[in-house]
Image 1 (tube, rainbow, N blue to C red):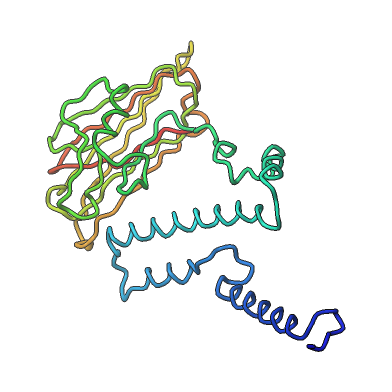
Image 2 (tube, helix red, strand yellow):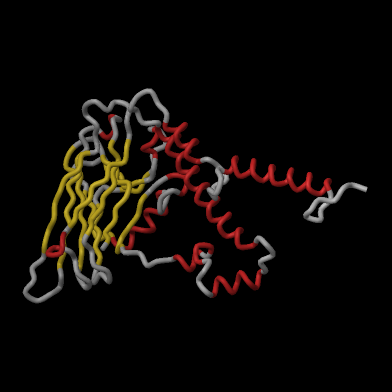
Length: 283
Protein backbone atom coordinates (compact mmCIF):
# COMPACT_ATOMS: atom_id res chain seq x y z
CA UNK A 1 0.00 0.00 0.00
CA UNK A 2 1.03 3.62 -0.66
CA UNK A 3 1.98 5.60 2.46
CA UNK A 4 -0.74 7.89 3.89
CA UNK A 5 0.05 11.55 4.53
CA UNK A 6 -0.94 13.39 7.68
CA UNK A 7 -3.87 14.92 5.78
CA UNK A 8 -5.35 11.49 5.28
CA UNK A 9 -4.53 11.43 1.56
CA UNK A 10 -2.25 8.93 -0.11
CA UNK A 11 1.04 10.03 -1.65
CA UNK A 12 -0.45 9.57 -5.12
CA UNK A 13 -3.40 11.83 -4.26
CA UNK A 14 -1.03 14.50 -2.94
CA UNK A 15 1.03 14.39 -6.15
CA UNK A 16 -2.12 14.82 -8.27
CA UNK A 17 -3.33 17.71 -6.10
CA UNK A 18 0.05 19.44 -6.37
CA UNK A 19 0.09 19.06 -10.15
CA UNK A 20 -3.44 20.45 -10.39
CA UNK A 21 -2.48 23.52 -8.32
CA UNK A 22 0.58 24.13 -10.52
CA UNK A 23 -1.58 23.87 -13.65
CA UNK A 24 -4.11 26.39 -12.26
CA UNK A 25 -1.25 28.75 -11.29
CA UNK A 26 0.11 28.64 -14.86
CA UNK A 27 -3.37 29.31 -16.26
CA UNK A 28 -3.71 32.33 -14.00
CA UNK A 29 -0.36 33.63 -15.25
CA UNK A 30 -1.52 33.25 -18.86
CA UNK A 31 -4.82 34.94 -18.09
CA UNK A 32 -3.15 37.79 -16.26
CA UNK A 33 -3.63 36.79 -12.62
CA UNK A 34 -6.91 38.05 -11.23
CA UNK A 35 -7.71 39.95 -14.42
CA UNK A 36 -11.02 38.66 -15.78
CA UNK A 37 -9.88 39.24 -19.36
CA UNK A 38 -8.80 36.05 -21.11
CA UNK A 39 -6.63 37.99 -23.58
CA UNK A 40 -3.98 40.62 -22.88
CA UNK A 41 -5.74 43.33 -24.89
CA UNK A 42 -3.26 46.03 -23.88
CA UNK A 43 -0.47 44.13 -25.64
CA UNK A 44 -2.58 43.73 -28.79
CA UNK A 45 -3.54 47.41 -28.83
CA UNK A 46 0.09 48.48 -28.38
CA UNK A 47 1.17 46.32 -31.32
CA UNK A 48 -1.58 47.77 -33.52
CA UNK A 49 -0.65 51.32 -32.61
CA UNK A 50 3.11 50.87 -33.18
CA UNK A 51 4.25 53.04 -36.08
CA UNK A 52 7.39 54.87 -37.15
CA UNK A 53 5.64 58.20 -37.66
CA UNK A 54 2.45 60.08 -36.83
CA UNK A 55 0.53 58.87 -39.89
CA UNK A 56 -2.96 57.45 -39.44
CA UNK A 57 -3.17 53.67 -39.77
CA UNK A 58 -6.20 54.05 -42.06
CA UNK A 59 -9.59 52.41 -42.31
CA UNK A 60 -8.23 48.89 -41.73
CA UNK A 61 -6.66 49.95 -38.44
CA UNK A 62 -9.89 51.56 -37.25
CA UNK A 63 -11.90 48.43 -38.10
CA UNK A 64 -9.39 46.21 -36.27
CA UNK A 65 -9.54 48.44 -33.19
CA UNK A 66 -13.35 48.35 -33.24
CA UNK A 67 -13.38 44.56 -33.29
CA UNK A 68 -10.80 44.37 -30.49
CA UNK A 69 -12.86 46.63 -28.24
CA UNK A 70 -16.11 44.82 -29.11
CA UNK A 71 -14.56 41.42 -28.38
CA UNK A 72 -13.10 42.67 -25.10
CA UNK A 73 -16.49 43.94 -23.90
CA UNK A 74 -18.20 40.68 -24.91
CA UNK A 75 -15.46 38.69 -23.18
CA UNK A 76 -15.78 40.67 -19.95
CA UNK A 77 -19.57 40.33 -19.87
CA UNK A 78 -19.46 36.61 -20.67
CA UNK A 79 -16.93 35.79 -17.97
CA UNK A 80 -18.57 38.06 -15.39
CA UNK A 81 -21.95 36.43 -15.91
CA UNK A 82 -20.58 32.89 -16.08
CA UNK A 83 -18.70 33.40 -12.81
CA UNK A 84 -22.03 33.22 -11.01
CA UNK A 85 -22.63 29.74 -12.40
CA UNK A 86 -19.58 28.22 -10.74
CA UNK A 87 -19.54 26.21 -7.53
CA UNK A 88 -22.92 24.66 -8.21
CA UNK A 89 -24.94 27.90 -8.42
CA UNK A 90 -28.34 26.82 -9.75
CA UNK A 91 -30.48 28.57 -12.35
CA UNK A 92 -33.02 29.31 -9.62
CA UNK A 93 -30.34 31.02 -7.52
CA UNK A 94 -29.20 33.09 -10.50
CA UNK A 95 -32.78 34.20 -11.13
CA UNK A 96 -33.09 35.22 -7.48
CA UNK A 97 -29.93 37.29 -7.81
CA UNK A 98 -31.29 38.93 -10.96
CA UNK A 99 -34.46 39.82 -9.11
CA UNK A 100 -32.33 41.39 -6.38
CA UNK A 101 -30.49 43.52 -8.99
CA UNK A 102 -27.17 41.83 -8.30
CA UNK A 103 -26.60 40.80 -11.91
CA UNK A 104 -27.72 43.93 -13.71
CA UNK A 105 -24.65 43.87 -15.94
CA UNK A 106 -25.81 40.53 -17.36
CA UNK A 107 -29.22 41.84 -18.40
CA UNK A 108 -29.27 44.42 -21.17
CA UNK A 109 -32.82 45.46 -20.29
CA UNK A 110 -31.70 46.46 -16.80
CA UNK A 111 -29.07 48.80 -18.20
CA UNK A 112 -31.17 50.64 -20.77
CA UNK A 113 -31.34 54.39 -20.22
CA UNK A 114 -33.45 56.96 -21.95
CA UNK A 115 -31.54 58.82 -24.63
CA UNK A 116 -30.77 62.48 -23.80
CA UNK A 117 -31.02 63.39 -27.50
CA UNK A 118 -33.89 64.68 -29.60
CA UNK A 119 -32.05 63.78 -32.79
CA UNK A 120 -28.90 61.67 -33.13
CA UNK A 121 -27.21 59.65 -35.83
CA UNK A 122 -23.67 58.62 -36.68
CA UNK A 123 -22.74 56.65 -39.80
CA UNK A 124 -20.02 54.03 -39.61
CA UNK A 125 -19.25 50.73 -41.40
CA UNK A 126 -19.35 47.34 -39.68
CA UNK A 127 -22.14 48.40 -37.32
CA UNK A 128 -19.95 50.69 -35.21
CA UNK A 129 -22.36 53.63 -35.60
CA UNK A 130 -26.13 54.02 -35.32
CA UNK A 131 -26.49 53.26 -39.04
CA UNK A 132 -24.33 52.12 -41.95
CA UNK A 133 -26.40 52.28 -45.16
CA UNK A 134 -27.83 55.23 -47.12
CA UNK A 135 -31.34 53.77 -46.97
CA UNK A 136 -31.14 53.71 -43.15
CA UNK A 137 -30.08 57.36 -43.08
CA UNK A 138 -32.92 58.33 -45.43
CA UNK A 139 -35.46 56.53 -43.27
CA UNK A 140 -34.20 58.25 -40.12
CA UNK A 141 -34.15 61.87 -41.31
CA UNK A 142 -37.08 61.86 -43.75
CA UNK A 143 -39.77 62.64 -41.11
CA UNK A 144 -37.93 65.86 -40.16
CA UNK A 145 -37.07 67.28 -43.61
CA UNK A 146 -38.95 70.44 -44.63
CA UNK A 147 -36.59 71.58 -47.42
CA UNK A 148 -33.98 69.80 -49.57
CA UNK A 149 -32.42 71.30 -52.69
CA UNK A 150 -29.40 69.08 -53.32
CA UNK A 151 -28.44 66.85 -50.36
CA UNK A 152 -28.50 63.04 -50.58
CA UNK A 153 -27.62 60.06 -48.41
CA UNK A 154 -24.72 58.29 -50.12
CA UNK A 155 -21.81 55.92 -49.55
CA UNK A 156 -18.68 56.31 -51.67
CA UNK A 157 -16.69 53.06 -51.97
CA UNK A 158 -13.79 54.51 -53.96
CA UNK A 159 -11.90 56.63 -51.45
CA UNK A 160 -10.92 54.49 -48.47
CA UNK A 161 -12.01 55.70 -45.04
CA UNK A 162 -14.46 58.30 -46.37
CA UNK A 163 -16.61 55.57 -47.90
CA UNK A 164 -18.79 55.77 -44.80
CA UNK A 165 -22.42 56.65 -45.40
CA UNK A 166 -23.25 60.31 -44.97
CA UNK A 167 -25.25 63.30 -46.18
CA UNK A 168 -23.51 64.51 -49.34
CA UNK A 169 -23.86 67.60 -51.51
CA UNK A 170 -21.84 68.60 -54.59
CA UNK A 171 -23.92 71.62 -55.58
CA UNK A 172 -23.01 75.06 -54.26
CA UNK A 173 -26.13 76.64 -52.81
CA UNK A 174 -27.75 73.29 -51.95
CA UNK A 175 -29.74 73.57 -48.72
CA UNK A 176 -31.20 71.05 -46.31
CA UNK A 177 -33.57 72.06 -43.48
CA UNK A 178 -34.87 69.76 -40.76
CA UNK A 179 -37.35 70.75 -38.06
CA UNK A 180 -38.40 69.42 -34.67
CA UNK A 181 -41.73 70.65 -33.34
CA UNK A 182 -42.59 70.87 -29.64
CA UNK A 183 -39.47 69.02 -28.45
CA UNK A 184 -39.90 66.83 -25.38
CA UNK A 185 -36.25 67.07 -24.27
CA UNK A 186 -34.28 70.24 -23.91
CA UNK A 187 -31.42 70.84 -26.35
CA UNK A 188 -28.22 72.41 -25.11
CA UNK A 189 -25.50 70.68 -27.14
CA UNK A 190 -25.31 70.57 -30.92
CA UNK A 191 -22.70 68.15 -32.30
CA UNK A 192 -21.77 67.80 -35.98
CA UNK A 193 -19.43 65.14 -37.40
CA UNK A 194 -18.04 65.72 -40.89
CA UNK A 195 -15.54 64.19 -43.25
CA UNK A 196 -12.25 66.05 -43.56
CA UNK A 197 -10.42 64.79 -46.63
CA UNK A 198 -7.57 65.46 -49.04
CA UNK A 199 -9.43 64.02 -52.06
CA UNK A 200 -10.16 66.49 -54.84
CA UNK A 201 -13.87 65.64 -54.86
CA UNK A 202 -14.13 67.50 -51.52
CA UNK A 203 -11.77 70.36 -52.44
CA UNK A 204 -12.56 73.67 -50.68
CA UNK A 205 -15.90 72.33 -49.46
CA UNK A 206 -17.45 74.60 -46.80
CA UNK A 207 -20.91 74.27 -45.24
CA UNK A 208 -22.71 76.96 -43.25
CA UNK A 209 -24.89 75.63 -40.41
CA UNK A 210 -27.76 77.46 -38.71
CA UNK A 211 -29.64 76.44 -35.57
CA UNK A 212 -32.89 78.31 -34.98
CA UNK A 213 -34.69 77.98 -31.63
CA UNK A 214 -38.21 79.26 -31.04
CA UNK A 215 -39.01 78.74 -27.32
CA UNK A 216 -42.75 79.28 -27.96
CA UNK A 217 -42.93 81.47 -24.88
CA UNK A 218 -44.57 84.85 -24.64
CA UNK A 219 -41.99 87.62 -24.48
CA UNK A 220 -39.11 85.33 -25.50
CA UNK A 221 -37.78 85.86 -29.02
CA UNK A 222 -36.36 83.22 -31.33
CA UNK A 223 -32.60 82.69 -31.33
CA UNK A 224 -30.14 81.74 -34.07
CA UNK A 225 -26.65 80.21 -33.94
CA UNK A 226 -24.42 80.05 -37.04
CA UNK A 227 -21.02 78.56 -37.87
CA UNK A 228 -19.09 77.20 -40.86
CA UNK A 229 -17.06 74.00 -41.25
CA UNK A 230 -14.47 73.16 -43.91
CA UNK A 231 -14.17 69.58 -45.17
CA UNK A 232 -10.85 69.93 -46.99
CA UNK A 233 -7.24 69.30 -45.88
CA UNK A 234 -5.49 71.96 -47.95
CA UNK A 235 -1.95 71.82 -46.50
CA UNK A 236 0.19 69.19 -44.80
CA UNK A 237 -2.31 66.32 -44.67
CA UNK A 238 -1.96 64.74 -48.09
CA UNK A 239 -2.59 61.20 -46.85
CA UNK A 240 -5.31 61.71 -44.26
CA UNK A 241 -9.07 61.22 -44.21
CA UNK A 242 -10.62 61.79 -40.81
CA UNK A 243 -13.83 62.48 -38.93
CA UNK A 244 -14.02 66.07 -37.69
CA UNK A 245 -16.09 66.79 -34.57
CA UNK A 246 -17.61 70.22 -33.90
CA UNK A 247 -19.67 70.97 -30.78
CA UNK A 248 -21.74 74.01 -29.82
CA UNK A 249 -22.74 74.55 -26.19
CA UNK A 250 -25.79 76.81 -26.25
CA UNK A 251 -25.47 77.46 -22.53
CA UNK A 252 -28.19 77.85 -19.93
CA UNK A 253 -29.52 81.09 -21.39
CA UNK A 254 -29.75 80.00 -25.03
CA UNK A 255 -30.58 76.29 -24.82
CA UNK A 256 -33.87 75.09 -26.32
CA UNK A 257 -36.33 74.31 -23.51
CA UNK A 258 -38.98 71.60 -23.64
CA UNK A 259 -41.84 72.72 -25.90
CA UNK A 260 -39.59 74.64 -28.32
CA UNK A 261 -39.56 74.39 -32.09
CA UNK A 262 -36.02 73.79 -33.40
CA UNK A 263 -34.78 74.02 -36.98
CA UNK A 264 -31.39 73.02 -38.39
CA UNK A 265 -30.30 74.38 -41.77
CA UNK A 266 -27.16 73.46 -43.70
CA UNK A 267 -25.96 75.00 -46.97
CA UNK A 268 -22.95 74.24 -49.17
CA UNK A 269 -21.47 77.71 -49.69
CA UNK A 270 -18.30 76.81 -51.62
CA UNK A 271 -16.17 74.00 -52.99
CA UNK A 272 -16.56 70.74 -54.87
CA UNK A 273 -18.53 68.89 -52.23
CA UNK A 274 -19.10 68.13 -48.56
CA UNK A 275 -20.02 65.10 -46.45
CA UNK A 276 -21.74 65.02 -43.05
CA UNK A 277 -21.14 61.83 -41.06
CA UNK A 278 -23.33 62.50 -38.03
CA UNK A 279 -25.36 64.99 -36.06
CA UNK A 280 -26.69 65.12 -32.49
CA UNK A 281 -29.02 67.50 -30.68
CA UNK A 282 -28.87 66.59 -27.01
CA UNK A 283 -29.42 67.86 -23.49
